[in-house]
Image 1 (cartoon, one colour):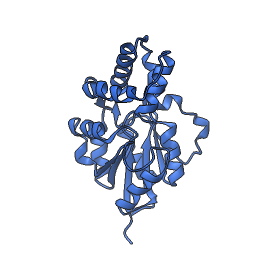
Image 2: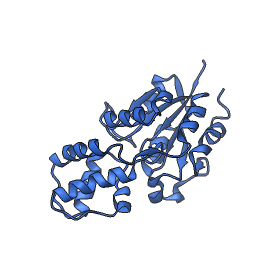
Image 3: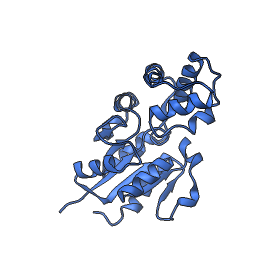
Image 4: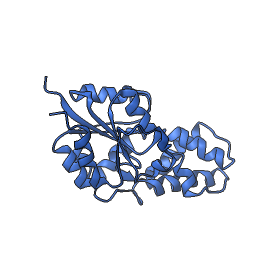
Length: 224
């Protein structure tokens, strides 16, 4: 059996730097609801587990009561703000091209799939990506492993021939739950909250997108 290499990227904080646009959108909602804006670092720490949790955390931190309608309003605001400042991390397009030369590339994000695809398309990254699963898809959000396992199955890979690339505790746990290799992006804004004591030494750690292809090569050295 010819097992394929699969590399699955997180989106926010891994492929793209969306920190400012997420912050501005959350703060616009807070102000609209009568609250005082939060610092960018505070909101960045809330990102990674989907829009609903981000909105709940941001409003709660601002002392504003949370309502289910706030999630839809946040998505409306963010939809207008999506590409104001968000860009791929420097060197990411070239890194993705290198990775795609030897592996199938997919994106697994807790962001809803529609804005994720808009970002990938508009920022010129989608040509390297075979498939995208968002947080509003048929599977529970990361760190539940079912979405990652589905990608592995769909692309003819195995856990041992798959690398999860991400910047947060959520990505760390997703890879662990699915039994895949892991590459942690220390340049991502989510890594600031990661407990490095949880690292086993088997993970690859990168400080720039340009380091990702070589890191994946080392992790998958035994895979044809």
